[in-house]
Length: 437
Image (cartoon, rainbow, N blue to C red):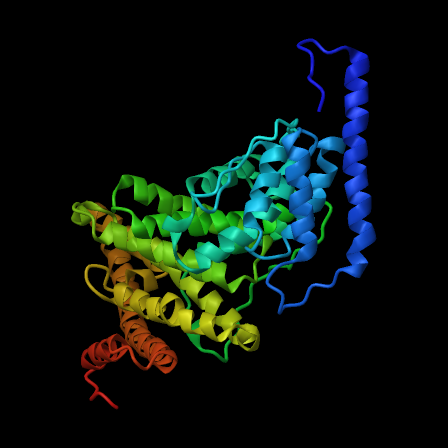
C-alpha cells in the first residue's frame, strides 16, 4: 500500500476510496460465486468458506482495506460466521471491532487487532448487528450459570447496546396491552385455587409478532439477558445494598421482557424468584421487626402470581420443553414455589399475603372505630373480622396442601434430593397427618 501523505489531496482520497470499495466488492462477489460449490457437513471440523473469509479479512485488514463500502464485506463475514456457533467467535469479535470499535473478547489469550479502518456510527442498526453477534455467546454462558466466565468487555458491550433500548416499545399496541395486564396481575390478591392444574388462569396478553416494523429484534432478548446477568450477580455477590439494587433492577428487566414475550416461561420463573428473594431480604433484615409486613406480603403475592403463571405455561408447553430444562424447573419453579408457600405461612408473616384488600380495610376501620368509640360500628366490624379470620385459617390449611403438592412434584423430577421429603414431613406435622412413603 502506498505511503499516505500527512494531508492527502481530495483526488487521492477518491482513488483510495474507489480502490477500497473494489476490494470489498471483489471478495463479496467471490463469496457468492463459490458458496454453492462448498458444502459443509457436521462431520467436518472446519468450515472452509469461513476459513477463506477469515484469511481475506486478515489480508485486507493489514493494509486497512477491510472496511470498504461502509463495512459491507465485514457484515457479510458476520452473517456467515454467526451461524457457526462458538467455533469462529474470535473472528466475529474482530469484525465487530473493525465495524463498531468494540473490544469484545471470549478468551484473554486472544488479541483483537486494530485494522485502522473507519468505524460506523453506533446507532440502532449497528446495535442490532452487534447484539445478534453477542446474543448466542451470552446465552451459552448464562445457561451454564457461569457469570464469572463472561468477560467484562462483553458486559460493557451489552450496556452500550442497552443505552439505545432503555425501555420496551410501549407504543406498540400489543406491548402496551401486555404491560397493563401484567401489572394488574402482579398487584392483585392471591387466589390459591388457581394452583389447581385443572383451573385455567385468564390473562389478557397477546403474542407480539417476531418480525415487526415497530419493534427492533433486539427487544425480544435484550431485557431477559440483562435480567439474568443482574440476577446471577446477586446470587454470586456479597449481600449488601448494591446487590439488592441489582435484584430490583432485574425485576424491571424481566417485566420489560414479559411485556414483549408474555409466554416465556423462563422469564416468569425468574421474575418469581426475584420477588421471592426480595421478600427474603426484607425478612432477613436486621430491622425486620420495624418493617411493615404489608411490604413483604406484596412481594410474596407477586412471586405467587409469577409461579402460578409459570406453572400454567409449563403445563401447556411441557412437550416442547427439553428434559434438562424440566429438571432445572425442579428447584427454580416447583421447589421455590413450595418454599414461597411455607414462607407465607410461617412467622412472622402468618398468612398475611392470603388476606385481600377488603380485610385490610376492615382492620383499619376497626382501629379507627375504637379510637372514636363507635360501639355499633365496632361490633359490626369485629364480626366481619372474625369471618375473615375463619376464612384465613381455611386458606392457610389449603396452602399447606398446595406446598405438599409442589414438593411432591419436585420430588418426582428429582428423586435423589432428600430435602423435598424433609419439607413434606414438616408440612404433614403442621397438618397433624401421618407421613406417607
